[in-house]
Each structure stands twice: as structure tokens, then as C-alpha cells.
Amino acid sequence: MKTSSPAARQRKPAAKTQARPNAPAGPAESTPSSEPSDVVETVDASAAAPVALIDAVVDGPSFAELGLAAPIVQAVAAAGYRAPTPIQRDAIPLAMSGRDVMGLAQTGTGKTAAFTLPIIHRLLGGEKRLRCLILTPTRELCQQVDESFRKYGQFTDVEVAPIYGGVAYEPQEKALQKGVDVIVATPGRFIDHMEKRNASLDALEILVLDEADRMLDMGFAPQISRIVGGISPYRQTLLFSATMPPEVEALARKYLRRPVVVQVGRRSSAASTVRHAVYPVPRGRKNDLLVELLRRPEMDSVLVFTRTKHGADHVVRDLHTAGVEATAMHADKTQAQRTQAIERFKSGDIRVLVATDIAQRGLDISGISHVINYDVPAQAEDYVHRIGRTGRAASTGDAFTFMSPDEIAMVRTIERVLGQPIERISIPGFDFGTVAATT
Ligand code: AMP
Picture 1 (spheres, rainbow, N blue to C red):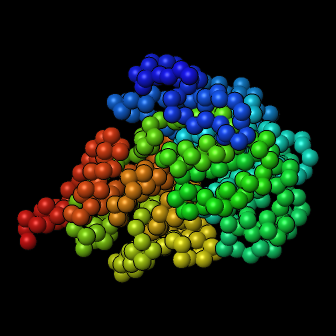
Picture 2: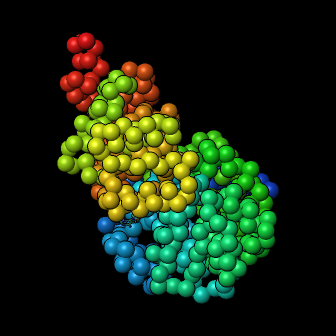
């Protein structure tokens, strides 16, 4: 096996395929070959050069040059995409060639199209039976991937059904009985349908594990194992994950055959279009600071994150008291309430959405102007995902983090993971330094 040092890797042209010493190997039970995985690094991984994760590769190949069928090229043009993003440029040809792909990319990089487009290409003109299953951690991501599939497949006859919990079974059963090519599902509800024999995995050719790290975080490993156990080992498997903890590497070793690893940017790099800032503030004054910041005219679409459901409700109540309309979105809300909250936020009907981490992924709301971390996220990686809500696909956004004295250590950890310090903004009267000095 060839190995390469990080320095050697940086000197090599982008998109060059190379072996990585710790890349996951194929599954022992289904792949006799001892060939290593390949790694495609799409951008410079050095900390000194901030990476542009979202930018399309304007001097790279076009969607048509990637070999995608005409109706798909037509759909991406209709979506307004001028050129593939780095993950699309690298993952699409590999997926079209039938290889298993492990995409290390956070949301906002164009990863959904990176797997959706080659899947539609492969399914074109085939028999109508369930040929592709996409597993997602949350209902919101499930709805969003389903929407993407419809958008990119609008000029084809490929049919997709979203399957997630918290809503009635019957419409889903009807959709499945009618026959679809693709199911996008959360694991629990899909198993319910498997048990009721509403869905058969017999003809399945492609499995996608989207946001695999999140699925494991949410405890879906047993459900994934159960579902994959029912699928032919001769399938193609595509796994996408924002991070690569050992659990995800193990998952990839178990379910992927000689995968090619496609990596966009440093594992924990934050979207480069986002401007970050930390506001030191005593815990008891966070709400006043929030109201103060929301007075600014540029704050026109703000996603506020709290650590707990109770905290989210509390912030919404306090904002109402201060005359600011806001709505909460968390796991205690019904699916209808969550969908309505997103719709109202997307349409601009309300400008402040207060959410827990359940909402941090999978939300694709273009035009979010600001993300505010009302609480510092407990995991450094969550910071990257939360701020990934803004700065999506070439727009810019600001990400502000409220830091009380007990959260200083957590902010330092995040800065270490990001590999860069985050600017501090002190607002007189709010900064605990000045508050402490004057009281
Ligand atoms: P994702 O990383 O899949 O969540 O995609 C993030 C956003 O990028 C979505 O709003 C997509 O519509 C958009 N997007 C995906 N591919 C492209 C592209 N090639 N050019 C411009 N925008 C894109």
C-alpha cells in the first residue's frame, strides 16, 4: 500500500486518487480483495489556507461533461447551478462507475446532489421497483432529500417516496403499494413498513447512508444493521458524513466494499463564507443581548440554537414579552408543528426560529442571515453543523455565539477544532468583563 504525507498530499493536484493509510478497507465478509480504499481530496487541507467549501468549480467539468443524462443536466440548469461543486465533481463520476463512495462533507457543500444525480442517472429507464434506499437521521433531512430528488428528477419518470415517523401510515402505505424507484426514509419508520411487508428490499441496488455520523449519534446503529441485513451484498453503497469518528469508520468497514473516500476540505472546517463572532455575556443577560441584536435591520432571518427544548421555549417566551415574534422547533413539537414552523420561517412570515440541535442538520433554508448560538454547543463538531445553516451555497451569513463565563472552556475547544480563533465582540453593558467591572 502506498502512503502519502500531508505535505505530499497538498502538492498533488486536486482530485488525484491516492491511497490513505487509515482508509477503511472493504468488508471482510463480502470482499475477498485486500485492495485499499482510495482517497480523493478535493481541496488543500492546510490550516493556513481557508477552504471554500461551497464554491462551484467554474474551471472544472460541466454537469454534461460528467456524463449525466440530458434530463438531469436540464434539471440542474433549471435549478440555476452553473457548475458542479468539488464534492459533485469528484463523487458523481465515481458513483456513476458503480464504486462505493464515502463522502466526507458537511451539509452546504452540495452533497445531496452529489449522490442524487448519479442515482437518477442509473435508474433512468429501468423497471419500476424499489431500487434505491436513502436513510437519513431526521424527518427534516428526509423531506429535504426527497425534495431534491424531485427537483433533479423532474424531467425523468423516476419516482420517490419519503417515509418518516410522526405522521400517518396510510398515505405512505399507498405510495409504497403504487410502486416507487426510490425511498428516502428515517430508519425507525422504514422498519415498521418492512415489518408490515409494505416495502421489499429484494431488488435493491443502491443504499445511501446520509449523515451517517448523525445517525449513529441518534442511536440508529441497530436499525441500520437490521435494514442492511436485508439487502443484497452486491449493492452499491454511498455513505456521507460530516465527521469521521471511529464509529463511522467502523460502519464504513462493515457496509462498504473498497470505498473511494471523497473529502471536501478539512474535516472540521467551517463554511468559509460565514463570519463568526463570540459575544461574552453573563448567562442571565443572554436574552437582553438577543433582543438587542435582533433590533439590527440586517437580522432578517435568524436561527437561534439552544441546548434544551425547555431553553428554546423559554427564549421564545422571553422574545414575545419583548415584542419579538418567534417560534420554537424541537423534538416535543408534532411533525405538523415542525413543518409549519419551517414553512413560516422560509416564507419570511416569522424572522426568528428557535431550535434545538434536532433541527441543526437537514434544514435547507436559503437566505438565513444569521445563526445565533444562544448556548455554546456541547460538542465542537455541532458548532460546525449549526453554523452550516448559514453561509450555504455561496451566500454569506454571520454566526454569533453567546458565551457565558462557564462556557469559555467550550469555546476554546471549538477554536482548537476549527484551527483558528473566533473574534470576540464586546458590547458595553453586556460583556461580563465590563458588567463585572461596573457592578
Ligand atoms: P447540500 O450540501 O446538499 O445541503 O446543498 C446545499 C445547497 O447548495 C442547496 O441549497 C443546493 O440547492 C445548493 N447546490 C447544490 N449544488 C449546487 C451547485 N452545483 N451550484 C450551486 N448551488 C448548489
